[in-house]
Length: 347
View 1 (cartoon, helix red, strand yellow):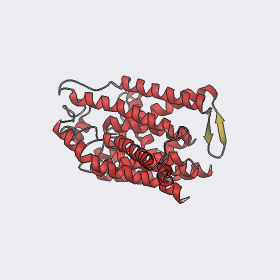
View 2 (cartoon, one colour):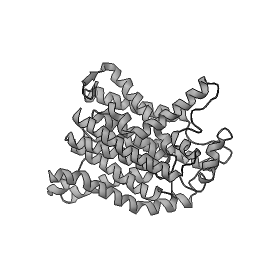
View 3 (cartoon, rainbow, N blue to C red):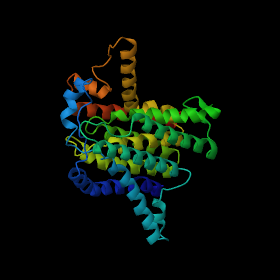
View 4 (spheres, rainbow, N blue to C red):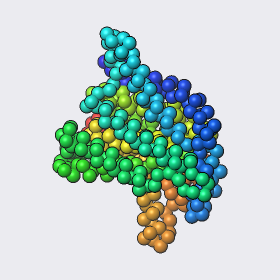
């Protein structure tokens, strides 16, 4: 049993320290190449947001999420090299968590999502101050939906999965509708990427969520998947070390897109996707607040529910310091993740 514990936690520590070592090189590159938005704010239609954040959006680089997925890939590479150099050593063989049934698909999703986000970030920073750059929301949505379709078909055709588990009820058969449901969940999590709006917010929240799923996977005896989740947490914590106020860089799309799409795969692999709104409550409420705001403005003749959406900016607008918003999101995230874990394990 101690080997399983070591397998889950040792790679996470490796990913964290790898991230810390990579960060100075990435920071130097991002600042020397001025990898930030050339135009701050979101236009005249968002005066509250502009008053809160306009001054912060230029001068602080994007693409800090590279630290996360690069730490994951480097950790996998380090462990693989150890198994090559010490082929008979069971200790190093045990650390290898790559497996076709548990980690290939989430790793593939992380890479594709992160690269797509990286392309968007590169286009964002290369645009002029008077030209809107980056991949359009539609193009990013198409990539996410295609990735969701691939993942859904993998689960449906290769893994034979066509039902979801309802706590205290049992499996709910969806049949062929499992495929659009999977795509809907991935797209919904992708839309929650707007949580990447305050220093330390997205990193802390996502570290908590992936930690919860690591615990669920471990108690389901999916040790490789649990190790993958903790490696992602290690990479996120390395990023968070440099993202706490004042942020040295922002996660941006290359981090948030890869992580939210990967989270979908992990939730389905642990058959606890129904609990996502609880385990990932901060993501859910952030996305929901945007939907509520848009619906209210459309159907209530421009009237708003929040001063500004998403919700974390509303709290800023009513006078909360950003660090208070972030830390309270972390607290709520931890509590809800614990509740979700308990439901997943006893339901």
